[in-house]
Amino acid sequence: MEKLILLIALAFSFNANAFRGVDQTDLSIGSFSEIKCGLNTDCDKVSGALQMVELKVVSVTADSTLTKDDCGSLQIGLADVSITLPDSGSVFGCRYTFLNGNDSSTLDLHPASGDQLFQLTATVDHIARTTALGANVTIVAVSVDQWVAIGVSSLLLPWSDVTPD
Image (cartoon, rainbow, N blue to C red; front, side):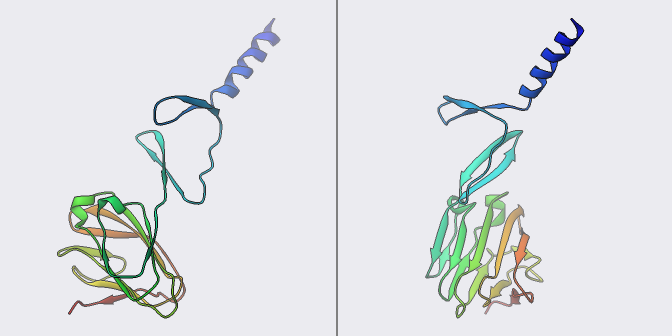
């Protein structure tokens, strides 16, 4: 009898790691013990729940200004472009990733007036610039006047601090 109770307890303990998957209408799509995020999917834990967001990939060929609707996107510079960021305080927690996708182009990141790109620039209002193919950075709005680089990748520190005209 003790072996039967132990066997039943073990069987139930394996199901404790499963969770129920639901779609946006709360329709059950099954139970899972593992989730793998796809190539264009960003997965985060938000308030104890898994949040999966399709990554928006944008080819940038002209100067542009980002908004909160662009949060979570990958912006790929394919020409000489300047990308202006929204005020960090208006998009707290917003994350953008930038990639220079052309070896003969300049990619400039302009913070909103009074904002600073920490780890990329020395002071407020300065521009982060790269001309290196493959240079990329992910930034997050962390306060009313600060963007912080949480991921920078490329050889030989390709981002430079540029004083605006």
